[in-house]
Image 1 (spheres, rainbow, N blue to C red):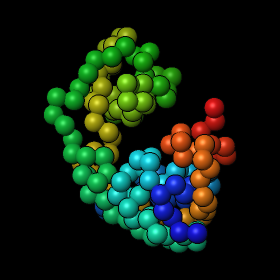
Image 2 (image 1 turned 90 degrees about the vertical axis):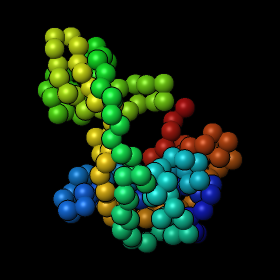
Image 3 (image 1 turned 90 degrees about the horizontal axis):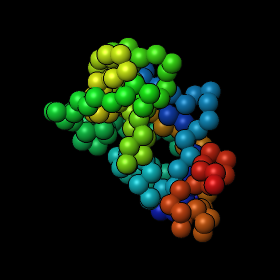
Image 4 (image 1 turned 45 degrees about the vertical axis):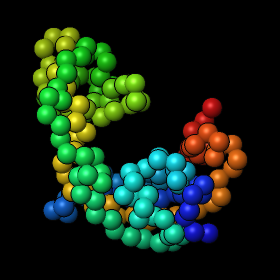
Amino acid sequence: MNISENTVVQFHYTLKDESGASLESTSGNEPVTYLHGHNNLLPGLENALEGREAGDKLSVTLGPNDAFGEPRANSQLEVPVDHLMGAPAWQPGMVAIVNTNQGQRQVTVVKVDGEVATIDTNHPLAGKTLVFDLDVIGVRQASEEEISHGHVHGEGGHHH
């Protein structure tokens, strides 16, 4: 089955910067599982996966505008330290998760002063050209419920 709108896709990836340094990988962990055609993945990745099938391996290079965008000026905010998730203590340069009106976002800690942290709201990979090595391991038709909800249910997906 080819990847197309309303298919559920599972893949492993290795993310590298443009110099080839590995940044993260799903190898040895659970694969990424998403509903194709519902804005659940970076558009550049979704476009590259269109028409592919299980067993396909590909490498996709995304410039900043197709990945996490260019860094925005005036992107620093002060927030209570207890709003940062992901570590028991915070130091400048660490990446934290914060809840926003648009869902969870990765931010970079710039400074910690007592109970207040200054964070940079740009994605930590903003401004970078990224290389994704992808290994498609599964493609199936989505259920009507998954399509109506706009995301995958069950193993590897969302649980209600």
